[in-house]
Image 1 (cartoon, rainbow, N blue to C red):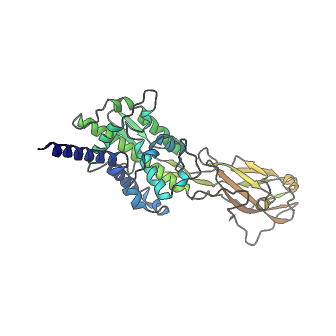
Image 2: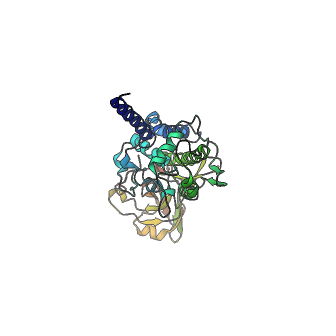
Image 3: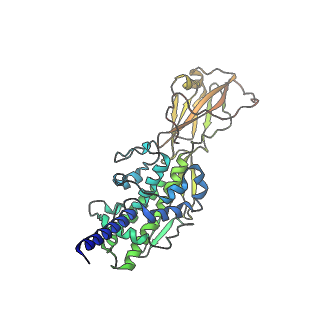
Length: 374
């Protein structure tokens, strides 16, 4: 073999290795795509996918440029992929179209479960990161015929550390659990030799554990993203009436923020209603109905029920002995508001039954300029 032929063979071999490594690591590749396909096929996720476009493209290619791999855990923890939420490391997620945003988001969620690359296990002090080893591990994972099946459960048992990790509760609870799952296994992750021919069974255990918790996280995050696109639901109550000298009860029980959910042990989620630290933060009341014309909100309530003096309401200029229109808005933990209108009746006696009055959505009030997430 001539010198030139030998050099060419070496270059081709190095190029092939680089291609495999960058495919598996830098731009997603088959491991990320396989995980995304499995998550999107999950019985909980699949019915929600009509809310997003280009599902096939997102599944088949879930990578992102290297510049978007900085601070991945910070972005995931902050839910920076939801429009309107600032990225901790300054990435402008709002500049991305939805397809690109979801590609990057799903890749971020997959990466932060890789034990030796971007996960919280890499954080200092005592952290560890080795991207070449990570690429080798992902390349091995990419050759698997099957991936861990998480459908029907929110838990994963790591037989190496004899620990069960339960991805249940709110999104914050799941993020906390994921952080612990990575950090508590850091010693095991660090001791694993992620090279071809080195402890292949241990490599498989590390990769299997990483892809399992990655899928649990990816499922929660894609559901969180899709539900965040929906408007807050502001519940109505029996049309409030009251007499001078008494009080009037405003009841918003049944209101909810769509992305305020709680995951169950069986891999499904349930809605959380009312004021909650992860959902609706408070309600704004415009008793005299002047917000659309530039007026101010009259009262802020941090509870689902508000009991207010009829005399104070009359003091706002609300006429008595006739039905009056008022507004109420619910504001969630992302600072997004959705408004609704209702009627009330103030009098010195009883109130007549209206012919046809009901709670009406009136989103887009002048004061509420921030649009609901799209």
